[in-house]
Image 1 (cartoon, rainbow, N blue to C red):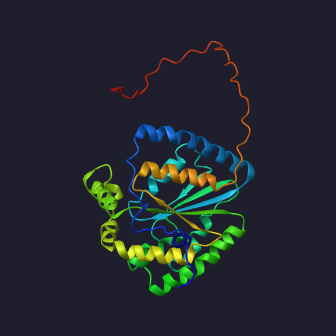
Image 2 (image 1 turned 30 degrees about the vertical axis):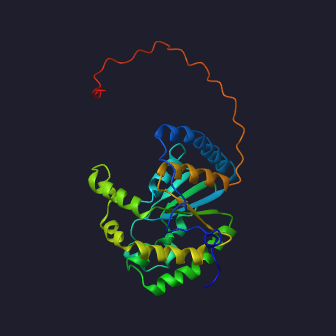
Length: 280
């Protein structure tokens, strides 16, 4: 039915992420070595965005535990939050529920000189809302029909719109959810909805496939990243993101630190200070 998506054309089998035997997990030392130059490029991108007034919108969607938060953290680790703004909206209020569905997302789109990253987005309607019964099937179908037009308007206004879907295998999802149960540092990541959603793997698969069918367009395609190995996934996504934006690194000024002023008789005051303990 309808047009084939890029994923169907390329033969990508989303039931078996990667389509081949996975490489050994990347070691942290290697990951940090490869991430460092990408961070430098993200800073160069940031300076170009500020200088050019470009508007960039990046949408991250995917399975529960697919690693969206880790990718976003890796992207924003070395850049300014004044330029790279992360949007992670809570559940809609009663007032927002009465609005046009995409209305609460539109004010968060980027202004000139901004990169806005959506940690989940308007595509909640095509995924969790549809699967878990938070919207009607009619509302979901209306969304799928209308969102390409909305995204066309966003792109036509000059915004660079990038959409990423993070895929993870059933086995990895189970391991990561169990880790959230067992590790006290991660329990905050586990919600009741995560547990309920766990039983709906194939409902989410069907919803994802139909979302791709309707919303993988020439002006706003979906890019799929297999993220069973989080470190490799982050590197691949950042590298791809940089390749999709026509930024040009600005010439770095030649800066030499000047001499400090002289003391001019300054002496530190002899007053008690509340120093923190130094056990390390």
